[in-house]
Picture (spheres, rainbow, N blue to C red):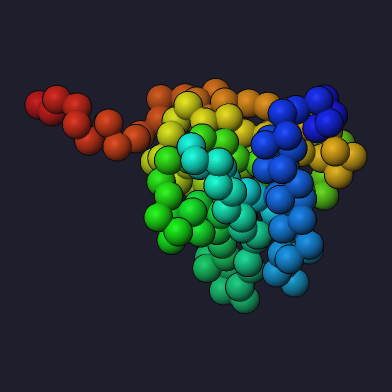
Length: 142
């Protein structure tokens, strides 16, 4: 679907992710990713992937955006947009990012976007079945 069919606030969320892709620091993979998160008050926080010569220290765009939201005092994330340069199909967040997002809201919507301004909306719960969340720590233990 084309983003022009979305409510303006979600168009803005996606545009923010697309713009952040241009700021990605990815000299090793050349795989640019931009992300933005929307909080319940409508604020949008952005991030891009930041690679490192020590590959294990790379930071994904989604986790960067979440960190920026938390740093600004917001943990009530309701939606995420993710943008990369892959044209053929929609790409979701990696497993580590899915887990970080689940920390804040397993019910959030994700807008996966392609360079042609089309998107696919999925719910995080679909991408992370049987998720380990903060509620998991409240479960009755043997």
